[in-house]
Length: 91
Image 1 (cartoon, one colour):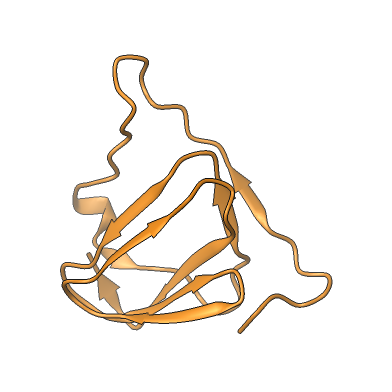
Image 2: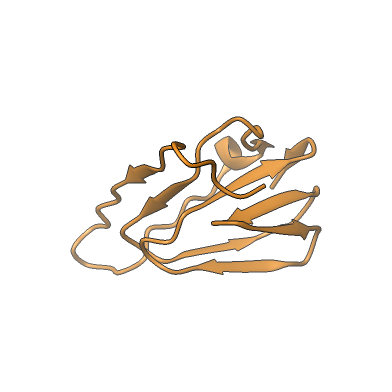
């Protein structure tokens, strides 16, 4: 895919509680369809660690496309453009 010349990238700021350095995003609301090819890449101020329990799709890391399936883990450093586009419901 790669980024087009004028494509924008969104910044998403996360503020974990002071007593921890981890901000888990778990639960029923994360069992869903992720993204679409038209969605912009985004980056944030924290590391992102993702684990695919069920489903498949493509994880975009800047200009690289990584196809994922159950059992795979992805680690994204802070400030790195990325997005997830699932083939259906994922968790």
